[in-house]
Image (cartoon, rainbow, N blue to C red; front, side, top):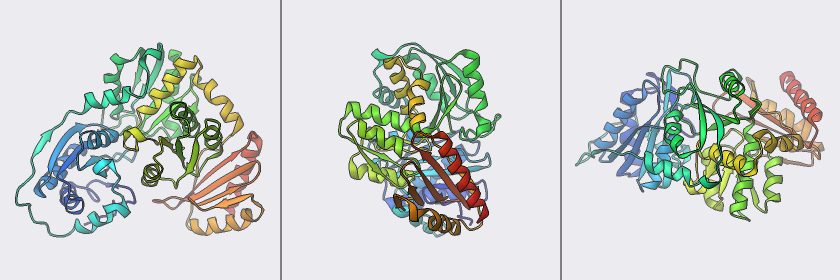
Length: 448
């Protein structure tokens, strides 16, 4: 039994080798054994293999004695929502997010939508999967749960509809699940939606929905320009991340959206804690300090961010990878709340998205994340540290290697799942310096 699909934060692998109905059923049984859950939410994404895997998973959960609350085709955040809103014992989402078409996976949470990751039960589940299981004395039952209405109502609580004005909005679901939610929000918002790759389609006729890939952005950009739209939004398949485009068709790095959302939350709750990751930091720290908040750094990754948010009771946390976390959403990430809040801000200020972020991009120009495939990533990190750390103002190892100078900084970290290093560089108001240092570092990495 190939269990290499078990990762640090979730389960993700090729179908049927690393994930199939037999393994899915066993995961359900092991999940109940490890967590003791008796009421479990199950949802699934648009991939062709997802319904069958969700059915097998549910069979295993019920055989172990848990009741299953089936919310059907949905996004990952709807499983999070249903788990905390209806006070369930846990939830499992069948999804492989933006992985290739022949992959699938699962994201698991326990009570309160706390993540089940490698250090909070996922390894124990993995260890149990190949073993023998006994059926519970009494099997669980399956219930159908329609969470859409309550979920939509919750989303609307983040904005003030009285402040909204007509906007022309391009929405690109990438044939994932986001289009279903846009259709339900449409009657509640004074926006005109231009819908691109809108219908759920697990064959992914226009490619797997992953707006981080440059080649996947063109359809959103074209629709923006052709329709003279005010803003564009694109999602990954399970829509727990959203990516924004301004009215010029420019892709907006998630880093700058973190600062905008932090500023908005601090106007509502002065002095609040805001969590950020170590890859790009200066713009976020500057905006949080200016808003009277407290910036708190966390290691990259949803399990770490959510843990620190709970410890600090942070109102909001954001990663440059377009994961945005909200205290009132059980500290979970949502791909719907961010764009709604940004659109609300545009309506209130009367400013375009470009004018909201241009000043920040000029003040803290950033390289965006650059990946390099390497045979020995650890060796490269040590060599770069030896060369750059001695003359730095500060060095930290919260997540990989972060090195700061007076006018520029960089973070270099190893991927958790691939033989890659990931580089991010930013400067203080000097685009040319940022670009030259990025090239210098990449040349040095390539030469080691």
